[in-house]
Image 1: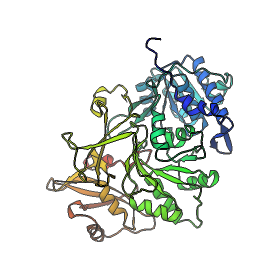
Image 2: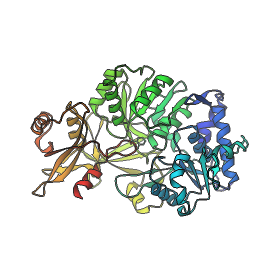
Image 3: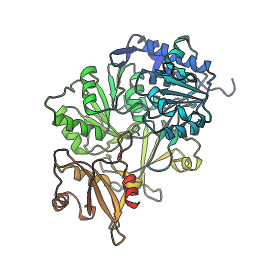
Amino acid sequence: CLGIKDRYNAAHTFIERNIANGLGNKTAIYYKDETYTYQRITDLMNQFGNALQSLDIELENRILLVLDDTPNFAISFFGAIKIGVIPIPVNPRLQPYEYEYFLNNSRSKALIVEKHVWETLSHLRKRFLFLKHVIVVDNAGEYPDCHDFQKLISKESTELEFARTESDDAGFWLYTSGSTGLPKGVVHLQRDMEVALNCYAKGILNISETDITFSASKLYFAYGLGGGLYFSFGIGGSTVLMREIPSPEKIFEHIETYRPTVFFGVPTLYAAMLRFAENSERTFDLSSLRVCVSAGEALPELFYKKFKNMFHVDILDGIGSTEATHIYISNRFGNIRPGSTGLAVDGYEIKIVDEAGNPVPPNVPGDLLLKGDSLARGYWNIHETSKKKFVGEWYNTGDKYYQDTDGFYWYCGRSDDMLKSGGIWVSPIEVENALLHHEAILEAAVIGEEDGDGLTKPVAYLVLNETASKPDESELRAFLKQQLDAYKCPKRFVFVSSLPKTASGKIQRFKLRNFVQA
Ligand code: 3SK
């Protein structure tokens, strides 16, 4: 037929291929004291897809998923994809005005929502301009103008046809908040998850059918979506889902109970796990893990070493982005350089360029550009920003990096976070890592601030360890001078009880800058 390419649907790759491979009875999800086989997930996914169709939600319509990490997420996400409807998972712990923005910006026709979120939102319903249906999980009849998730899908058949989708069709969106402005809808294609699976999960993690994954990062975040869902589904493995906010206690409990083999976390969580274990009277059994993964921010060398020492497992640090679908630079088994982000993942090309766009020599920081098949199509409805960030085949990540002579990449910070002190670029990451070696310091964030002469100087915001007393500033300076050139040493230290962070654990240095300017 003219105009029709080969058919492709990610719900086949990640769900139904497992049935075709004879894995219908295999556990796909461990959740609380229940197990969900691939057959059960397939049946529920089909029922959900049929339910959407019965509500006239059709090919290329968008739906917003405001769901916790439970099997309902997997069912809704892949059920929508199977019929060519575009699911948009977002954080279920936001303010009502943020959902108003997501619903109107994406023009979602349906909202699939946890009851605890709908309770905060229902009074705003008239402001959701394109919304036709609200499907509440555990609604129990309290909202007569909404559908109850369980009741709605249980009426439906477990048979469902795939939509006529192709690999280049929009498959799903994720919103990225960035450091300024409103969140941007990142449009991903049907095939993007399979590219990330092949390049990173198979290529770097050697993920296989015997693996059980567990991600502390939530499924609405690109990092958690791979680590906690489609990496294991893509190879017929199993995954552990945890609804709760990931405290160290809960993480240890889940690892000891379900004995996952691959764990995904972020540096602040690894630091919190170490602290929790150091202050605990008992030891924690992490022997089921063959590897831990870190992303979101650079993993300080210190955390890597302490973790390995305490739990005898490597953390593979890498960097990815929502726009890239998943991780594109990573350390590898047997070739870990602590503190560095590692080497380019096969399937991706990396360039580091100066302000004029020319490649920089080794050891010189520049802007990191990325090329690869899992790159998003662009941002929804923000043409100018899309043009600036997606240039030809390259995506400008907004991160400053340098590459050493062995090919390893070293993170210097977000381009917006770099500061010039005495006319020389300073990486906040380098100064923060030096500060973290001090026994009293738990967390550090460094920004540039103008001094009385209008010159920019580094300033450090510090969170102290619970048991530590405030160190003397001259002692801190002397400590840093052993590790850093003088122009990199902070001129001021501000002690705070916490640092501003994104829901995924990234330090928001721009908030400290705005706070200082205000
Ligand atoms: O922040 C990261 O490093 C990351 C990794 C994988 C997927 C998405 C993101 C943002």
